[in-house]
Each structure stands twice: as structure tokens, then as C-alpha cells.
Image (cartoon, rainbow, N blue to C red):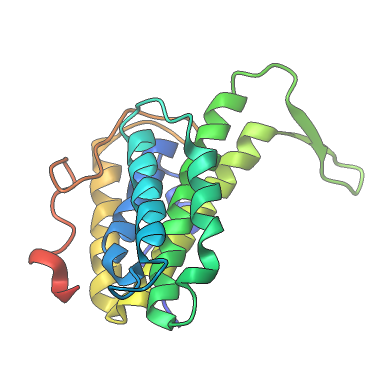
Length: 207
């Protein structure tokens, strides 16, 4: 069993753009493992869907408009069957899927927060409470980001090394103080050129 060095509740100490940045960096670490072999008839379509999913997730983290988030989700889910059949590839692919899901639900949470009257009555046992639709979307984003990290760790196999670097990303994001959950928070560049630095301590980590 994989034990991440942070929990879903820990992620909720970060704003949404930071949560998505963490998810996309986990997925970036294994993106090549999600590729089909050269010459496979679906290799190009799987690579294009994965590239677009990660690009859109990074766009949200950087605070740029990303109206294509839902389309990116649909595109990568459409080639799911083609990416199946090999456990390492399936886990790497799932990490990318979860990262774009986190971005799409986070973007939805930001949009819904500004929609008046978006409320659901939840709870029971004589103690109902009001929960915003935006809050539910934010929770789904945090869960998606956590699952993206788990899937990526499973793909890599060297889980101690992977979880250590994912935890380092989490600690750096906390120190940057980008905002509070479930707000969007300040923009953050999740690429190696941004403040979080390289994805691995040495190039590619053999991937």
C-alpha cells in the first residue's frame, strides 16, 4: 500500500490553483510512462490527449483562462481504452486523467463561487446544513489531486522517492502562502522553470 506524506485534508490547506499545480507536477513525472509504443495506431491520439490535459491543467494553475478544461477531460477519457492493457501505463495515464479532473473541478468551483443561489441542502438527523456547490467542486478537486499522486506513485514503482518529491512540492506550496482553500489563490507556475523547481533531483529519474 502506498502512503503519501500528505492527506486530502492536508491539501485543503492550499488554494485551488496550488492544489492543481501539485497534481499536474505528479502527472508530469510519469507522463512518458503513459505513452503507447512507437508504431501503435493510437499512439498519436493518446499523446495528444495527454499533452492537452496537462497543458490545460497548467494553464489553470498559472491563473490563465482555461475554458477548454471540460473538453480536455472528454478528450483524454475518449482514448482510455487505447491506453489500457499494461499496468504501468494505466497508472501513469490515470494520473494525467486525475490531474485534468482536478483542474476542471477546481475551475468549476471558482466559477460557481460567483453564481448566486447555488446551494444544496445537506445533512440530516435534525441538523441540516447548507453546503455550496462550489465547495463540493473544490472537495472533488482536492480528491482528484490526491488520487493523481497515488496513481503516479504506483506507475513509478519507487514509491518512497516519488512520495518524497511530491511532499517537497507540497511543503514549498505551503511556504509560498498563495491563498486559502477553497479560494482560487494566487497563480503558480508548476513547471520546472517556476518556484517549485525541477520535477526530479536528476533529469528524468530514468523515465
